[in-house]
Length: 378
Image (cartoon, rainbow, N blue to C red; front, side, top):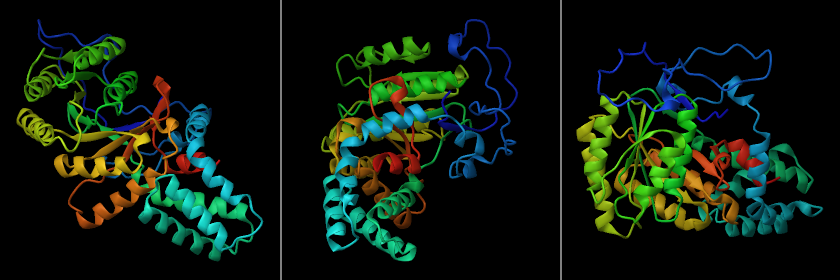
């Protein structure tokens, strides 16, 4: 059972579709219940009343969510972040807290692609915590660094909210090779397994076989797909959103063509897709996600900035953290997100909804700041 998004309670089911209307896929045959939370151990604490969506998006984990077993995920996360964390944790094997320790830690954070600003922020915060705690052993400093990193990353921990709009239209972008289409397939499985009805839009008409790849994921997840051979990406997106509304689907996932931020004509195409989706549904897209390859380090931050300038991102999916020693880039992204929030408070935050540490379905999970910090420094 996965715990990865908040769902607003839905009204009673609408009337049965008219004859001739496309049938819902098998995975979505049952109507959506009021937001199911993951199974918990026996005798759980009473579940709190659902909060409004605006508050739920920024709320901390509920007792039920916190009780979900994630041991196997933590093992995979620790293994995936071992390359990044090993160079950092060796700093704390000495016998005293001195300038040499902080200098080694600074170098380790920079090598992990935390970036200059985030590294300076973490070191300043860490020194304050060491002083307040009156720590005398390097091993204690390691725990304080985990606390400092958790606090820096905490604003990135927000659940993906669906149910406020029907359908919830999610537009997904990313550069070629970042794992965008695969992440869409995994997200589709998560959504469908949790009772949401999903419709896929194969708007990546730029890359050869992209439509077929997304079609394979649609077949695996038993969901419908809207596609056109050689069609215009914006037209495919418009048709998919219109079909999602007509068929009463809960989510429409729009797969866009991978492109580099320097490919201005393709970035303009993304703007066009967003404008056309808004014509199909005046409130859409409700989420604009960017899939980032964790191997790219500081270049990932450059991608976030470029795509945000074009699309005004609402969330991130960071993949392939297991193949890199650059997992510290999340600290740089967190600092950028904080600065963006201060400079442009009218924009929605840009949280990290999911992180991935492998190619398997279970290797994509919700991002939790404390888990990430502990796995990195384990």
